[in-house]
Amino acid sequence: MEEKILSRELFLNIAEASGLDIKDPHIEELYSYVLAVLPGLKSLEELDLAGMEPTMPLLSPKGGQ
Image 1 (cartoon, rainbow, N blue to C red):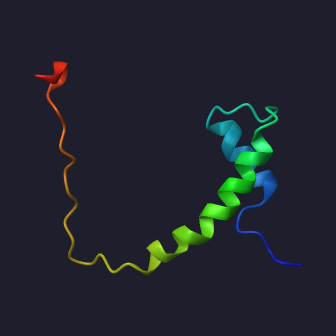
Image 2: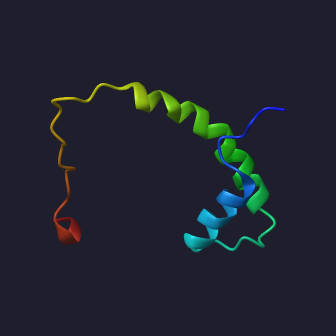
Image 3: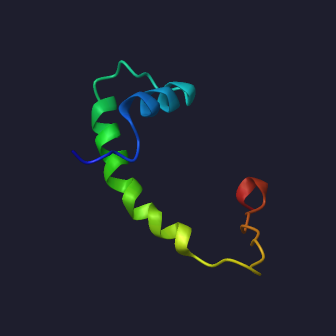
């Protein structure tokens, strides 16, 4: 049996702490989606960002002017 990256119990704890209704019927669909996405994010750990300065996001002025 393949070990999951994120247990259902941990997912539900995180979802509830994030303000999601864990009794919502769509929570199972969200869990499946998260399980499918997480392996793709693993490659981010391999990025060598040594010496990289963080960038500041471009923010538009308040009021859109």
